[in-house]
Image (cartoon, one colour):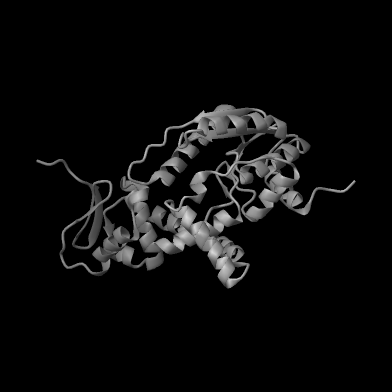
Length: 326
């Protein structure tokens, strides 16, 4: 009896490799949107999980961003049991933007809902349907923003309870897998709206593939994998350095003895530990802090996100919360 088509087999193999982390009886949840990528992932998980003695379910997050979002979520939920998934839950969220943009706000609401569902159901893993194309788009966005190494490292294949089995698989394979198995999917209209940065990045990657030849997408994703290993090593070194610093204030001589690539990341960690919001700390802020070490001429303290003050007094630097206005 012939096996599944190569694209289907590739997806199942990738899913199987991730599921081998689990023990018998563990529950694995698929974040199911109803799109081709998550549908192909759900179908593969529904086949592979029972073979390993695992349970597979699905969580559908209804962001409420379309007039028919509830209907689309219900349709995805109705189809999930036919893919071998149980339990299946729809979670409705409210997407509230607080200056970070709709995409970021929706992402935050989605992950909060997935975390809560995984905790409630006792899931070992949550599988996400990001593909090779998503990874390439992420790297390109990092380049366009002038981001640092961690951003250019793209999305991790594994973080906490989350796994991305399809991160090395082309988006065309997921659509083909749905077609050969007669699995319907829907196209999110937001994925075609150029008002969103990620949609413009998707078009840019397609244009690069057309103009420079095939392989650009894979090369961007490959670069992310290589950079992630570098970023992980630097993060380890920063953690070790941070552990040796102790509580502030910190001696200028001790900080300037640290290599600058580590020092700028160390400034970020110190600011976050003091209460700065992670999404608001940029290289502009860490560079300004570093100038207190390298180009200090008696200037006053810096005013940084989280209502923090960073200053220097003689041979030491400090980070403090702003005091009450008198």
